[in-house]
Length: 342
Image (cartoon, rainbow, N blue to C red; front, side, top):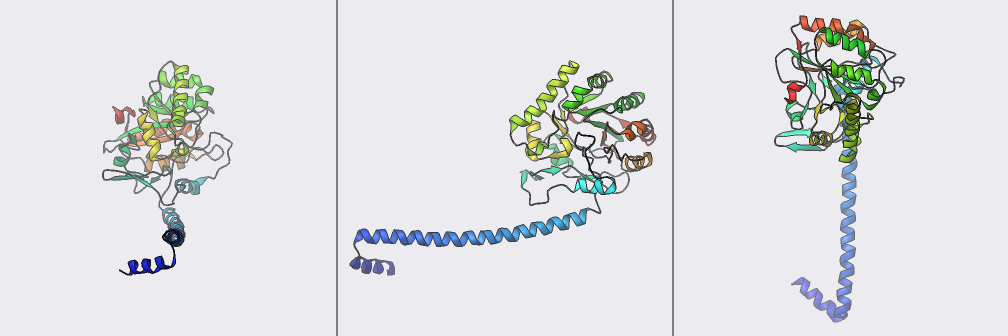
């Protein structure tokens, strides 16, 4: 009633046309006022959330530094690249994961991060299985694995191969002596520079998997065409070198991944393999001693472990025969990754 009365009064002063125009202009000013207020409130809220996120990230790093260790991720292919070393590097590498508020992909009751994640591990008591950045069940949705959910004493040996520096042949000799199958994840440069070693891997009955052609941060690749090119260029080069097709096993460079990456690899028919046992073995100028290597690899071994070692490590070449013997004495046997996809 009040609205009708006001309109009648105004219509006595202004024409119908001017009245409609005036009301429209007033409405626009009112809408702009309301929108400006909402924008200010949203901005204030985001400032609060950003500050809270930064505080939470700081607390997460401070809490996790004392509890986590070896990420096992491989470094740049340049052997002269400057990097940190020692125990501090082990913790720092795992904590590189972006702690900012993450989106999640939800499938049924399982939830897994969809932002960039650096694969890493948290270890408990000796001989027990570690925790990863995702669970066995979460990864399985995408045909991805980091260990076998078994209590049988089996190990899955894998080696990441970025370049050759004289250690791979010694590693192959040790594997042959123990009749231990392994999977070698190779990049394009290794295929180009060490074709005879790749041929020997195949001849000795090992599996050769895809570590991409250029070894980029694949988590930053969001389109299928670019992702597929990295995979297919590497696989094509392997077929050119060996005359056989590369196994559809994929290991993300540096252990960096996203849910979208896992989906793309799965769509291309690949199984993605992370790891549950690794140590810092890739620094050429700061190789671990034999004792340091044994301390990590013998105390953290567990049933169903996927072991990540690097072919460039002189320590790995020097201890592998003895390491395999010690694992065998602990009751372990060695199996191929085909267990996961067969």
